[in-house]
Image 1 (cartoon, helix red, strand yellow):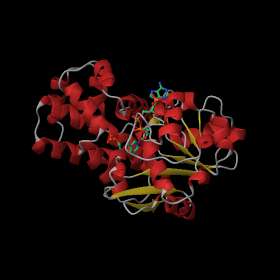
Image 2: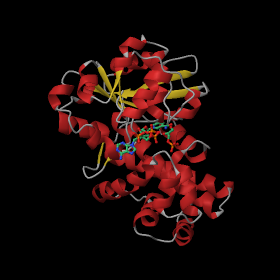
Image 3: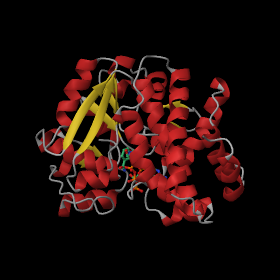
Length: 326
Ligand SMILES: NC(=O)C1=CN([C@@H]2O[C@H](COP(=O)(O)OP(=O)(O)OC[C@H]3O[C@@H](n4cnc5c(N)ncnc54)[C@H](OP(=O)(O)O)[C@@H]3O)[C@@H](O)[C@H]2O)C=CC1
Ligand SMILES: O=C(CO)COP(=O)(O)O
């Protein structure tokens, strides 16, 4: 596991129910957090109720050593920090390993989804790339609330094999072969959750939220069809379900961030207020550039970009948006 945040902690919990703890290796950057987990068996900063019983030397800030042990390398840092987290890692270190992206974000500057980035930069064959997606908040994993996740891989047997490692009493898994669609949909839903939060912060009610999200799923559908036109059912939980949970849940980082923007916080102060990362903030910018190529009509995504990066007034931008939705 590469990353020490909430989602990494939640997936460690799933894995611990299925494989021996001595088969799990965990990299995180914080040496204080490592020492705390080794001594007290809980992550001090994220999902601290989850018990972690890995052997001491299986948690380390030495990324090359952790990767050396692995058959599956689960990438689980916010996308904005992926390049710096992997700074010491070479294509040789990752050769022959399956790369699992648990990230729902875009690599900045490269403007690539994680699978594309790992394929281009580290020569990982596309069939060795897996994606973990679906509507699932780390907090509900910790509470053992029933959740469904989707594992995508171009090779469905590979997806099935990895899915077995995550199935628990409270986690059910689906598989998919749509690695591009699941990644892009997971990135986009974060932008729409920011929009949902902004509208909530501005005082729009549930009636308008429903219209916003109905339009959002159409934007997602148009975009993923433009990028990767295959037959897919956008109503599946990996697409629509993920959008709904992020747009409505009390646990959503992106909605919380958007809500603060709608209430008048600056981007900086909203980020400082949260201990966690809202991927939608970074995704809005990356998608703005990616969509220059595809030119898909995405008024909600464009409005979020204008508010976050062009300092447009949330009130005015959302009022203009209301004229374009139906
Ligand atoms: N949380 C969830 O429920 C879900 C999250 N995801 C995805 O999982 C990925 C990881 O997010 P999540 O676990 O929620 O993250 P969190 O917000 O819980 O934690 C933030 C993580 O980012 C690290 N970080 C913060 N700043 C920096 C920096 N400057 N450089 C390097 N690392 C930094 C933190 O490390 P440190 O503690 O050392 O500061 C910490 O590991 C995201 O792509 C997210 O979209 C997907 C599904 C569910
Ligand atoms: O992707 C997630 C849940 O599926 C988590 O993102 P949010 O915290 O913004 O909802």
